[in-house]
Image (cartoon, rainbow, N blue to C red; front, side):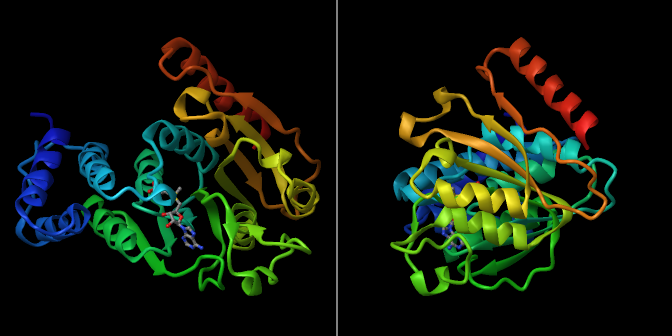
Length: 303
Ligand code: SAM
């Protein structure tokens, strides 16, 4: 068995032997792992192998009690975000990260596993079970992460970070009272949660720092886009909009892009051009290698 299979089997065997909710059992067995020891893995085991094994168990657990708004960020997206994050943060000493919608932590840990430097992160999530899941995984992976269980659109006791990464929840934000604290609150009706998350994230980004957001592909075409666009032009530098392959999503409505923003900084001389790109078919190795090379060249030239 591979290390990943051993991790999955260790968790799954326990979870299937208990009466409790599968995801609750994942938390229990991961806590036992920390205290009593886990599966016997090879010495050369990597954090990625462990993350993937736990992820398989989470996917199984999520199928049993599917919550459409809590979907884990798939690895295909996480690895692209991780690749770009690693390039943008290269040369930074101990960078700080924030994921305000951390969920299971799959996106955040995929990114942290790909960084060639040690980073520390803050994570926020409104769902208490998901926080317990992501917190125990952070401990197993030995990532330095602090957690807040709260509505991340309420004030956050978190200092500005070097990079925000977030797979944004899409839809209306129901708390209109709190929404009025945001420039992106429309005059009528509810605000889009994903718009408010971008505004909140920029507040918590250092000058020169970045925001990498998984957003709906129609972000700039929606009804409230006319407010979002001027806001982004004023408060951020739009660095890139990268369209993700349609094959990753079940319908056109669910398609996503990766939006890369930078917080303006005093030494900035000119506004760089926006990179508009499209990720090729991810199974096409040559096309993918060419695309990543283009991204690396862009990072080198523009940063
Ligand atoms: N990246 C995550 C992962 O890999 O598991 C998945 C993120 S999922 C698309 C969006 C997450 O945002 C969900 O876990 C949801 O519970 C959380 N969320 C939604 N509204 C929130 C809020 N107001 N404050 C904090 N978290 C929120």
